[in-house]
View (cartoon, rainbow, N blue to C red):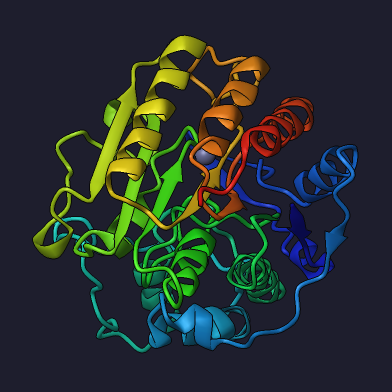
Length: 353
Ligand SMILES: [Zn+2]
């Protein structure tokens, strides 16, 4: 398995995250990247730095007006009278979820305050001067991991930080700016006719779901904590099954708070069976470790052992696979779960004939 990571991904180091009405230090921080490099290094995986494939592979998923906003937002925000050090919205337009799952187009407002509200969906996405550079580098790791599989590697691991699965076509949210898993899946489509994205982060991958909701060539399956009282709140319900060409190509398996290893592993097994039935030629895994019971955001009772067990299940699918890093905020749990998963995945992974 090849591992991709760019040191530029560590440049995003915001200081503000609004949770439960308080501004605290972000849980999604640069220490996570360093922890994962060390943990996967223990398996003999050495990180390769991705090349720069440019913006095209990112623009294949994200709207150009959104990418323009990300690239310019911090500098424009600094020009505000008494502007804070990081871009954060103080308006919240009523449109995104009510308008369904398609891209919304550019906002009518030209101002940075209105645009910050339009493009930044929640208060976990503070932007520094270096945020776009870090998100761009994170996406380049996903592109390089997809390219490795396109050139014949059986599997690859994109150590994406900042993560991506809450990023929409034109919207940042949930610590995510660019949807690395979607970018990797779109890249894989250049060779593989049908791609399945399977997401076992404890939060529903609402951005990924939205991006492919009307697509019949990319299956999205996710197991996650029931969003009825959990982030991302407005998506991730079992009745969301896709629309148009994508009808039946979206599968959500919400888990009740308190669910244990057996429920988690069974849900991942159901996702794997669905990808098999979809006849996916390649797989992208949105890999989060935040279902772990020690994670500060977890409402589940999942242990390290379950991550080894789902590694076996997903490896046994036998498809070319790109693993994309998503969440996981207990450094101790991440340091256990990620290598347990990757070790078991690799042991079980034999490409089908
Ligand atoms: Zn998560």
